[in-house]
Amino acid sequence: MRRWAHRTHLAGLFLAAAALACQPTDRATPPPPPPPPTSPGGVAVTDDAGRRVTLSAPARRIVSLSPAVTELLFALGAGDWVVGRTTWCDYPPAARAVPSVGDGLNPNLEAVAARRPDLVILYRSALNETAAQQLARLGIAAAVVRQDRLEDLARAAGLVATLTGRGAAGASLARGIDSLLHAPAPPAPAAARRRVAFVVWDNPPMVIGGGSYLDELATLAGTENMFHDIPAASATVSLETIAARDPDVIAVLADSGAPAVPAWAARREWQVVRAVRERRFAVLGGSLFARPSPRAPQAVAALRRALAATR
Image 1 (tube, rainbow, N blue to C red):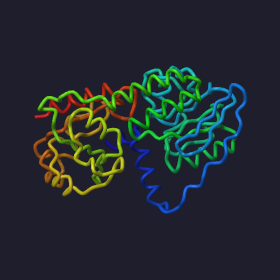
Image 2: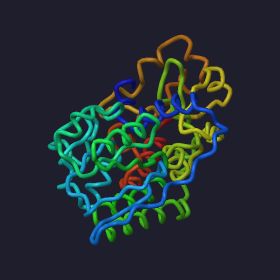
Image 3: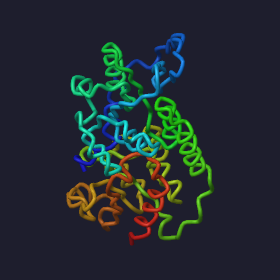
Image 4: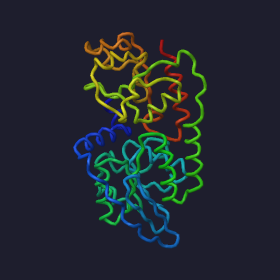
């Protein structure tokens, strides 16, 4: 599970949560500077950090420092323009042929600059916002995008599509995500309507809250995330809290081919959780659940099947 967490947006969430915990909460956000003029044929957006990103022409050499963004770029038809990726950018398979510039959590700016990008796209976190500023000082345009929930992905599709000149594809993709989010979920089989807790870390226990796209997938699949009331994407909780909420199923996130029962389930302290004692696990493997992506409809269907398979 630890290796898997580093492959997903969750690793970024952990870093962002730690960074935000160290920042004052009463500081006023300064107004953004006036946008610079764009040249004919140029493009400009305001990214999710409130920064104005201006290009003299649509990007054609892109370094993606997020698996979700890499997948989005390929879905927009801009995959041929990706010249750098993170170690964890594994979908679509064609992405693996792109040179890696590292794990993306603490960007190696020299490796990024060596790819000669005209645009770098990063996951929004305190560390990455600093990296974006450093890239700007090197004369490299950088955009920071939020990607915690599916609605974030819809906005990111529009933002990235504008920067790459793929506006029509971005609008189509955003409409598809919006339709998924607002369409009434079909009735789920009784076996799938099980209350679930997503456990993404075992020591200390960490669960998915209402701020994550996995919470949205649960709703769309017709089930209930037992920690939906936590506004953050993820949070550390006690084993006693998990036991008290008594989920019907524990969903764990793992690489494809992982065993059906995680190793930590054999530890004595975890036996206070009824679903652990009764070995009711739904193992969600592979990149389908690793990030919000245009494959969300397939993820919803796979989650429903995984829940229905538990007894």
